[in-house]
Length: 150
Image (cartoon, rainbow, N blue to C red; front, side, top):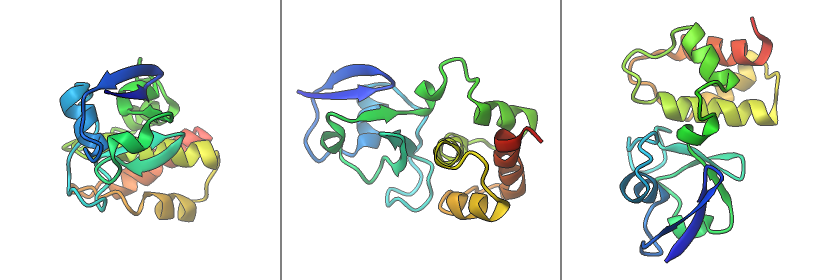
C-alpha cells in the first residue's frame, strides 16, 4: 500500500511503484479533474501541484509523491473560489473546457510564486499548457485579472 497526501488528506492506494500519478488520481481516488491529454507531459491537461509546484501528473509516479502534498483542481479551493477560478468565471474563459483544470492549476502555481506577473511572465509560465480551442488571450486576461483585479 502506498500512502499519499492528496488535497490535505492521506489516502492509501494499492498501486505499482511506477503507476503515473494521473492514473492513481483518476482511477484509484476518483479525482477526475486532471485530464489525460498527451501522456508525455507536453500539453498540461494533467497539471496538479506537488508541494505547491505545477507538475504534469502523467510524468511522475504515484510512489514519487509519497510524503509530499499533492493538490488537484478539486482541492485548490473546494468551493471553487480560488482567485484564479473566480477570474476564469468572471471572464468566461473556457470554450470546450477540457484543458481548463490544467490551465487553472498552472496559473495558480504561477501566482503563488509571483503574485503580480507581467504579461510576458504569464505567457512564459502558461506556454506549456495547450488549449485546443485557442482561448489563449482569455487565459492571459484571466491570469492578469486574478493577479491585479483588473
